[in-house]
Image (tube, rainbow, N blue to C red; front, side):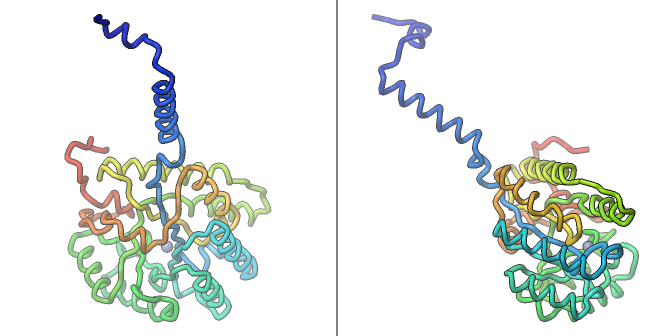
Length: 301
Ligand SMILES: [Zn+2]
């Protein structure tokens, strides 16, 4: 006896087979809908401008309390973070904050001494500032030493870019590249300036929405350029904004299926060893500095 395809597909399945199909469907749904579908949503949390960014409107005591809030949020979410220091702002009291940061298991890296802009100065002056920065934080620097370029500026010409990079490597530095760039510093400025005028401002939802949106954008860019998820490095700042909202932001990441890895683990992703092919004025995510590895990827404007 012959059946048409239509008849076959309309036949009731024996119970064990029906059960198996149902199970397969459930597994497929779970795989698509649960955070497990994004098993490779991994990122490292990094904080720039330690001991404290945009500190001018806050007393030292207020900065300390804010610094401690950031540390508490990291501890609560079991995040092993990295902080990048500008030594010019270190005092005896603020050095104790860095001690606490290091004792909590977070890494400390060099962000130059005075946060100079490589694009507005000579290479030799820039490297002097790098060395002065190292001198000021030597006790926390560890091995390997990590360096984060201020403004993510890595040189306006290939010669400057490659020259500075080579000198940093010769000094034993690994570059703490960033994959998820964002505007947390602008949200912070708005918040701190409003506070200085005794104005109440709640930026929680806007800020968290912004960071999640940037993270999704760079996740998609990694897929477009490399055809795979990467271990991301998120750039944030040690500031008043994150003292208020980092706990909620880390929770929002977890709710969206992200897990946190240390910065050294993230930087082991081969993406950060791809050649830096950008030389120009912009401070960019490393994903924007490399050529697309996928020749079929649609060109971006
Ligand atoms: Zn900075």
